[in-house]
Image (cartoon, rainbow, N blue to C red; front, side, top):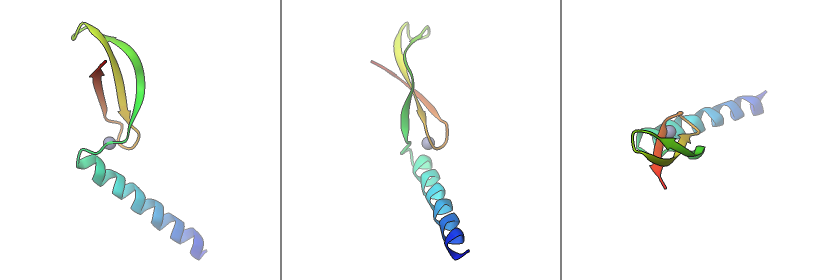
Length: 61
Ligand SMILES: [Zn+2]
């Protein structure tokens, strides 16, 4: 049982660390939608989503 508890503790710590990184602006970006047309910008953009907190950002290529 000790192993299970240790594993839980470690994963909680890992999640907390991820949140701290996100709060500091260091998100884990993955490409969510490549080459989407943004009508506001009038051009193709790439949508990135943070794997940890779900925040999105859009970059122009
Ligand atoms: Zn994030």
